[in-house]
Length: 133
Length: 133
DNA sequence: AGTCTAAATAGTAATCATTACTATTTATAA
DNA sequence: TTATAAATAGTAATGATTACTATTTAGACT
Image: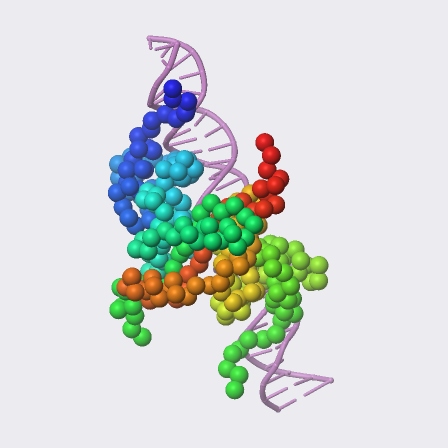
């Protein structure tokens, strides 16, 4: 009954396992570095290809915070993020996903809305206390 | 009393004027094409440099919808956007900016929040009617 | 009007994340 | 065991953006 022509690969398994083991929303390169400790000759292209496939399959999420490098997240229950403009870390927000916003927007607008992306920008607690001039 | 060492340039004036004359959230390249009709030998680097400076000065906004190319917007009262995943157009949303979200998030979290970015994703009315399979 | 100086530009090269390509390897079904 | 297409490694290409450098120019001060 399996119609998907998807085969197992230890590379993909490792990528997904490492991504699932962190909440740090890493970049492709961070994942590459960590996977390499286990599979030293893995190709960066393989990491990118698998991350793309996995996010297209809905197994992971691709995030864009606007700093030029994509982030990935295996925690795919929808949630918001906070990006510290100081240390460039991306953190999960505790606020629950507000799907009412989608229907609100859908009514206020003629479009079919699939989802929304909400990112808060600012300065995290750590960086605030470090900030001395 | 003027302490800014910023000089007039017809290039910057033209870039800002053309960006102000559209609500289409154009890319740097679109702006480049249009400015070239007026200043044929303007450099793409000049367009990028001015767009960067203008957005740092707060005169315009840089937007990132996650498709790899930045958009720019001279309408800088804060507002939300809708991105059509079909035609890749970026449109203004009618919903007002909800600054209560910022304070809500600030309390729920330890961080100092400057602003938030909210983008809705989906399929616009035009593309929905065109979609036949 | 003429001179000076730093800001801005044009044109080009470099960067950096990501994707594409190709020969080789490998999971898995027969 | 063999066959075959999926996945990979390694490398080249792409595309947006930034950096660099010699030249031009705004605008202040004679």
